[in-house]
Image 1 (cartoon, helix red, strand yellow):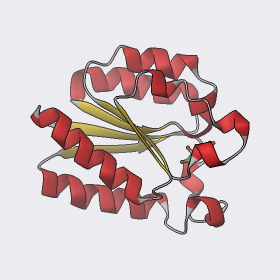
Image 2 (cartoon, rainbow, N blue to C red):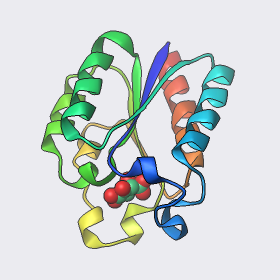
Image 3 (cartoon, protein in one colour):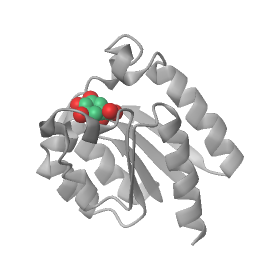
Length: 144
Ligand code: DQA
């Protein structure tokens, strides 16, 4: 099975952007860790990042044909994007939402997630490890 790991706006700056909140690891570090974990779990991986809402939506639409599960950190679009929620609702397989930080410990505007209305699981506050935990969960859900 193939999994899409999709990252939203500003996550290209990981490692340099507010490391006290988001950690020192870069998105390339996270991609490498995801690739190793996916291989160990017998999953093929597509890994992508975009700062543009429409590109994230197009990726989700493409995943309808190419992936069996989605791991998504929608970043700030988590809290604003009904369009990304609607796109995820067109996807049939497991969806796991990841946040590096614990969004519930932060500003009130980060407490609500539109994406959580579709996500099968949510991981927040585990830092970069959250992506690996999400892949573990996806593998379990795909095994059934
Ligand atoms: C984030 C949390 C969001 O509130 C924020 O806008 C991000 C990253 C996280 O991974 O902790 O950009 O999704």
